[in-house]
Image (cartoon, rainbow, N blue to C red):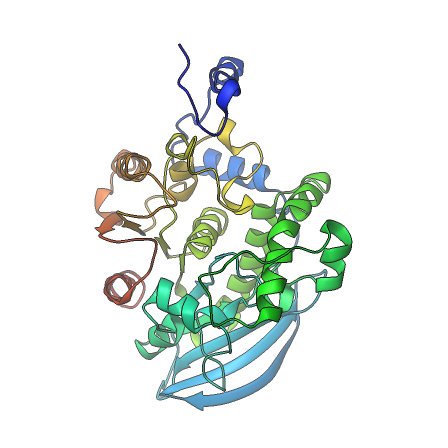
Length: 375
């Protein structure tokens, strides 16, 4: 008898029927073949990935950090804006990190959610930071720890967001749902509500244009990473990436698709796909690249460049994942790194509490980065 799925109800037997068509979530071992399959599934992986017409918009110093706002074109749409943060006293090139902002259903801002610019925290992010980052702009703290940190906006967020009127024309106006981010203005809350509905339309366009939302975002993150590698103040052989939630999603994709990522940190975004069935298929389209379920599982994508160092931090009471899905992913990642003969290159850390990247987790991640790219 088929398992009953609350989300599917009378269609619960659909899962078994899909399994009979072809295996779901087969094991895809690390290596060139899996890396190629990831790139083929994502799309937008076959052209130049260099930032175009790079400009420095402004510079500042604040709280021991030297900051720049830079911008570039990815070849379509509005210009990407990014913050570059590094220790004010830096005397030479430093290891580089791309800090990838979260999804959080909050598209009005991108980089501002995890980084302070010249004026400090942007209006409307205090509550989000309190819930997800224990109140800290962690990208600035990472710069203070001795890294050049690049914090780019990406497709649909911040400087790369769609205008409100364009989205309303496509999906209609949307009444904002009650939000945990209570300090955001009504205008920001309204924007985020419309953008949430609009993501579904954009995902259809991605499919129509031969890609996926994960593929477009990953392409833009590779462009950003290439910008970081080209900076004279960055040690290009010692560059990595980090992100929470949607940012962890992006870190997994960037690590899988860029051969020069030296180490990656994925926070609060790891599960087997089987562990999502029924109660947790609520994530962004970023987590579901079209066709990947027939090629492998999410941990396989994250580990496809093993034995390059990988840290995954799990929140044991994360409402976005089941404990079983997280534990199974951890076991699958462990097996992949054992398969390539370097089990110590994968670290899985489990923390109590809900979906977050709090100060304890940040300290552990920063220390891991110092060990794996900072020395």
